[in-house]
Image (cartoon, rainbow, N blue to C red; front, top):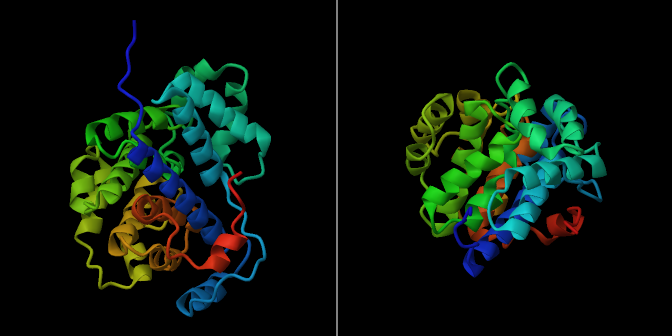
Amino acid sequence: MTTHPPAATAAGHAAARRSLEALALGDAFGERWFPLFREPRQAVNEIRARRTPSEPRWHWTDDTALALALNRSLDEHGHVDQDHLALCYALAFDADQARGYGHGMHLLLPRLLTSPADWRTLAPELFDGGSLGNGAAMRVAPLGARFHEDLDRVVEQAALSAAVTHAHPDGIAGAVAVAVAAALSARGELTLDAVADRTPEGPLRDGVRHAARTPFTLEPWKAADLLGNGQRIRADDTVPFALWTAARHGGDLEAALWATAEGLGDVDTTCAITGGVVGAATGTAGAPEEWLRRREPLG
């Protein structure tokens, strides 16, 4: 008979909820700066002036939709049950396909709706070896917060959650790095070197090491130039900068999101990652009330 470790503690559930709420806020805030809404020059000027986006409703994207799906599966099973998780991802996609899902998810998730277990063969076939995109990283921070008391478990569960859609080692490594960062944040122990120490060897870990050597005195847009801002949608082009801003502003969610937005690129995803990591410690406390009112509810 298969046995599984005990479910998360009350402290783990509380940290996961804090992370999820902040992830969604970061996602919705970051989406306001996407090129669809603002030209880059306009966005940079408004970000540096700290002008709150004027849209009355800030909708979140696939980042939050899939984070909610992952959270739902963990609530029901207490651990990553990959077949159930595949179904939850597919159901989230089917409920609203206009959340900004990437091309690979449009290919994969509809097929998992009727045959969830097929992720084992379908996910590795994406992009000749599996997706190395940032999708597994963008949704995973609440998982890291949930299991923060056991970092080995965080690494294991994050990798399992990623493989359902992102079979490439770099895609999996991105999820591991973000989950570990969120766990360390919840513990009050976040450093980029500590994240890198538990990230699988490869370009993603190299990027986090580079971030660890990037001074916090550097302007965020310059750090994004060095570390990547998600413009290529790859995990190794997204995660290092998002974790840099999270570590730079570990106790201040609002400052962390402004700094992340300054990097532009795939700004909803970088802000979702940063928000989920910082929020594992802070939740949305300290975020402007206006932001919280405008953000689409989680339901």
